[in-house]
Length: 179
Ligand code: SF4
Ligand code: SF4
Image (cartoon, rainbow, N blue to C red; front, top):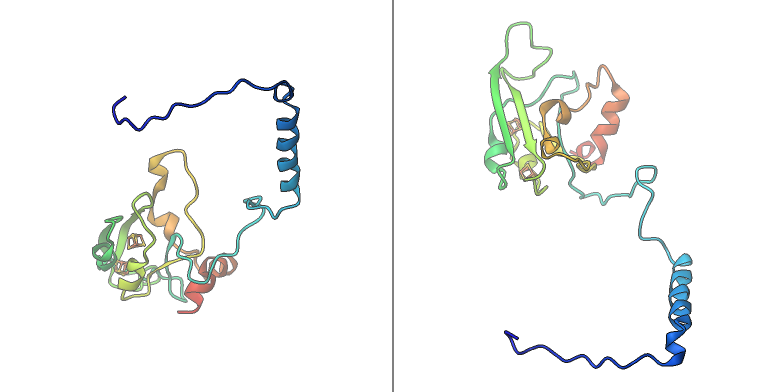
């Protein structure tokens, strides 16, 4: 024995009554039955959804303006502010004729967030000068593969308010609505 902290267990032989196992079974059934009448700790997700607190910080959303143009200008401030180094991006110059797609002269051609790194601190939202990113009230879905947790720009971008106003409103949620 390495630590000398071991204890000898006194294993008394079972009595005839205990050998019946009935008291143990009845006690176990009683505990099971008592749980039928208690409030359940679980919910039937995804049919049922929990109400999150107003300050809940979930998956990031890349925002558009009221005309449906992407707000992000690929300045990189969110990536610099991110303590988990979860954000990567590549900027590109807006070309003539793309003014209806991108609000600024520069935009994020690639924008990725690694959800396995993200700690949902909200610093990216705080750092953004363009109101281009915010943490929504939905959480990252489970996935069988690590690659599935790298959220790309198409996963993060909010629906276009001009093309799909209902989906846009659902995605906006309460947090961005109060901004
Ligand atoms: S919420 Fe925090 S950890 Fe997650 S991407 Fe934003 S800054 Fe990084
Ligand atoms: S999300 Fe905001 S802070 Fe991040 S690159 Fe885009 S404009 Fe800059």
